[in-house]
Length: 125
Image (cartoon, rainbow, N blue to C red; front, side):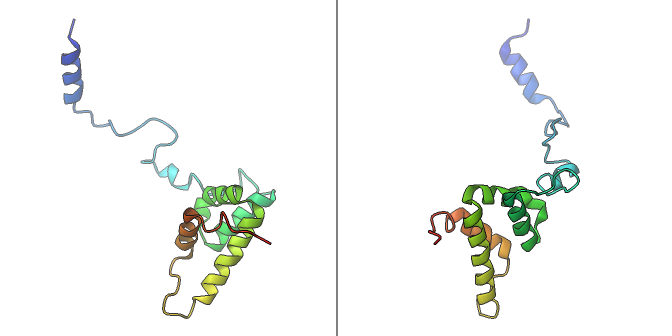
């Protein structure tokens, strides 16, 4: 019987070519995982207000591959605050359009403001 130390050393010295390839559905190395979070209308039709607003956000930013992120934004903020956030981001982009500091990437700007919490605690009246 081999000692545990010998088994561990032998296992660590194996040249296993496929040690980074996982056999599961969430493998990030596969080409199928690229559109994992996108909106596939053959499988899902947005029919609630939340899902339609998430689709509007994804379409506005031309980022339908990250539909799941926008859906989580709408669910965490709620419909009213998400609508207000979309309205605010559109206004900010339009205001800064012809200035020295124009917003170059609106979806990154929106994501940054969302993650910093600018839309979460704002009172809507």
